[in-house]
Length: 373
Image (tube, rainbow, N blue to C red; front, side):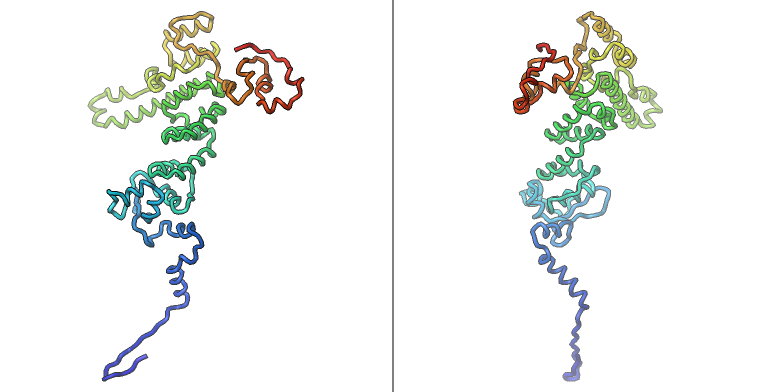
């Protein structure tokens, strides 16, 4: 519309956007009315630049994850101190060098929604972030997820992480599984990567479902792998110039010798139960491995033949077995008093009191051969 006034032309223009644009604009402006709960509204704000006052970056990427200090501060005491404490973070960008995109994304998703997508690839990193920023509910979720995923192939790596993060309940679940599935666990790839501390803890246990000769083979394989790792580390540390000027650099590479094996195994070697093997198993496996010296093996051979020696360093002869656990408070007290050599005795005497009370008296008086402990 236009009209003239004092020879000037004044033009008034009026336009209307397309109907579809109006709907889109209304939706973006009034998204709140479409969310029926606090949870839905928080979910909408996850990684949303709208009202964002902080964002995160990480190594190896120029991507950004948007966040909101209020949400982070109400979810984590660490974030609260970072953003609202006396030494509050002034920058609007926080760079994290100890995480990756997927792990950080799922960590932040949990703070906004109480949900996250845990996978075998990110769960340890998410657990780490939950510990770092003190989010116990996420830690619990990660731990429960790991408990449910325990199997022979991964139990050793989960045990290592449980120890590292000081998660005693998860650690206990791992040991319980290992005790009943020792043979499968020690032949897994993850077993070769356990720490010396974990190996020592394993060898100190009575309650393992494995014969000693198989356990020894696994320990020997573990020690060879650890030696090869140190060998590679030594190679990496020796520069080309060093090797050219000093031939001894290559000569000092660690090989799977007796000394190197004994070094990585440490004092845990004395928890191996060579006397739980028979003489043939010892001769074919231990004696040929080179792990023990002749002076150490002679007293063991003497013991096999009934001759005691003050020089004997390995005196444990009891075979490891999950049945060694029998005698705990949840089984029949008779088994704590007797050691039975009759097959079926455990099934009989290890009934709990309430199970035994309903059985016929003739079953209670059934005789088994037993000896006092």
